[in-house]
Amino acid sequence: KISGVFKKMHVRMMPGQEPPYTRLIDSARRQPEQTETYIKGTVVGFFTPELFHGVGSAGFHVHFANNDRNFGGHVLDFEIEDAKVEIQNFETFEQHFPINDEIFNKTDIDYKDIAEEIREAE
Image 1 (cartoon, helix red, strand yellow):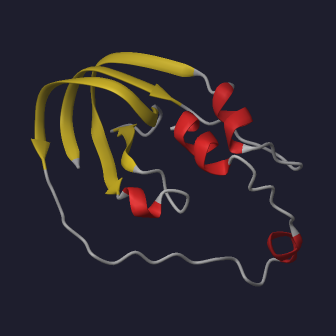
Image 2 (tube, rainbow, N blue to C red):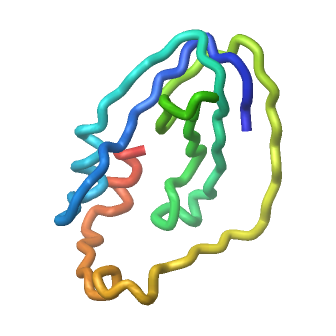
């Protein structure tokens, strides 16, 4: 977690979607990007080992939200002006699925090329 003032913050934002949903890679290719300068906010991220690529995106994954909560997204690049860095190690990964959601349970997911698409999207 990095909180403070950022000289530059470059993010991309996933637009909202309605069914039928597109593949992650198709949505990612259409994501708008935006850069703000001298903005206060927080970067939050985590590291996923290569072993879990597919469940998450292998490597670092970081997002930003400004203090007013009206700008943010997936971090592409940033420069720090003045910040506080906090690190937390964790050893537990827990994932919950919407097991009572009929659409989730009946959706046929095409997993072809999913690992490569996740890498490109991230």
